[in-house]
Image (tube, rainbow, N blue to C red):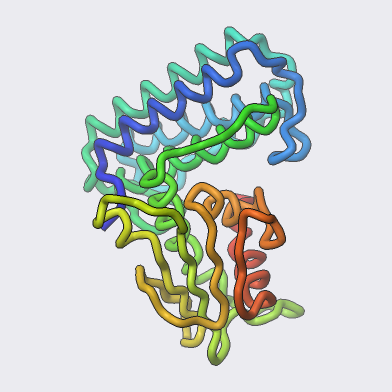
Length: 270
């Protein structure tokens, strides 16, 4: 059960894209983006629009095999784009993606680079991709960043699926094993909410003590506990904050938390 329903993901994807467009409407596209070293704002926006188009092509074609993602990664040649061209690029890509998602429905099987394998995967993935890069753009232009509590909780929930991927525990020379006796993490989104269903999704237990990574929504004792507001948890998991950040509270085995964050960061390179 996801925190957000499918239609909410689709609608929120459009909303987040519009917020991003408004944020950068009067910004200098050549400004550097600290959250994405080596990129300027124009390249970041090209990346977001390219991701929307990539996802849309997967869903429209009902692709069963991986689809090349050049649109997502090849941004080097777009460092000097005009703001109005970027705005139109973002609006069109998001609109076409949401049209494809709504036309497919949540349960249509399609290839996905992470857990799920349905159109729902792409609705959530592109929503949270857009949210995180809106945070990047906010810092680049010196604007505050905020996101709805339930959207942030769904982003953390999605991340837990990435954080249990088999690739995380594959043995490799010189790599510290992630699994081990007593290795558990409790992740808690702080803040007072009024929706009981949403609050039930505000805690997670990650169990690294078995033969594979396992997670569930739960309140439980663990070797290490990390607490932060929902949006701050998202930015911690995406490597925008570290566990040393004042917005993050850690109790227990800090080394275990650092190891888990480091190992799950391979998703940031996808």
